Length: 218
Image 1 (cartoon, rainbow, N blue to C red):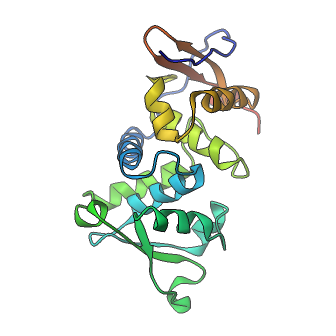
Image 2 (image 1 turned 120 degrees about the vertical axis):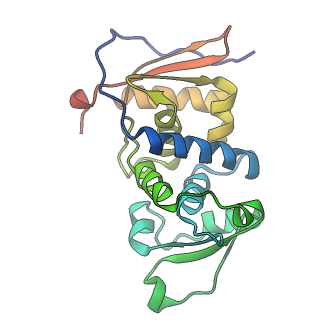
């Protein structure tokens, strides 16, 4: 039985039209796949990095993340998430080529991710870009990785102006405990990213409502 608690509910308002339906679906599918192949408690930043690698890999499972992208993700010069994914046996960083990479990183995905890359590289690239700004639940780039990942997972499960998902599945996708996830929901509420959230303990589902975009604080 789920132990999730509910945040304060507020009056419903009309939300915006759905954003990036195809991109949202692609990201949701990739997050689900990563939850099955990465260790249960892989860090949020490693999961965000793995998502970008999976969506941007070519047909041979090779991926190049440019320096500008890594700096935008606040990963420039940080080796820890790469090492975490290498230790998990999910990828292998390739030798540095400074003329080609210009501060970026190249890696080879390993196992099934390299042997059976998802089709539609252009649509995957669009999904990778959407994942950096997952409307309607965007958070500041300076937000901690756990908040960024939680907002992304919720955005991938949001349709129109509401979202819902199985509580246990959310903890699996985020690699967090239920108590940690409850706290992050409250943080998103206080940050005016969410308007309300609640947990249906009987159904084991969490429901949430993004704050209307035009009323969101900078």
